[in-house]
Image (cartoon, rainbow, N blue to C red; front, side, top):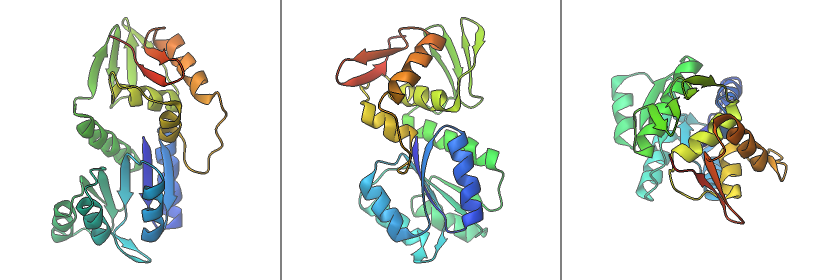
Length: 219
């Protein structure tokens, strides 16, 4: 997924950025709400990690404006505000989850995955596709009963297809899912990742629509 992180603490922000990127997602990190508005107007983010106390305002009004505009992008609040009333306010404003600092980075990864699965319409982390048995939570795949190892980028790409079965995804959409604003992407990067997935998971796992993009193959 392409994720927007709104966090002004530079030490924590760097740790969060590295954790999310290490999971194979692309992440755009901003430290102010005005920069967040600009980022969301520029790119289609699939999840937002939102601190509540930013230099130019509070996160709750930002979240309420987001929902008032009709945005359904999932939002996970990350904050040191730990009172029950704070959690209620955040969830009532439209947040999908609320994580109190300090928290374990592994738990953040798990919550991102859980929220993403709910929005994809299938909260079950266990999937089957052809001869593939997939555990999204554990990031494990069995092909005809034998384990297959994917890199973080390969996982992120495969998850993008699994979340949109039958949907055509353009090369640009896939690049936006895998890479942040400031990342230089080689022209054949997506083709290389798709080729590696086919070698590991089967030639028909991803179908090419020439000149248009790619879609998940039939099970």
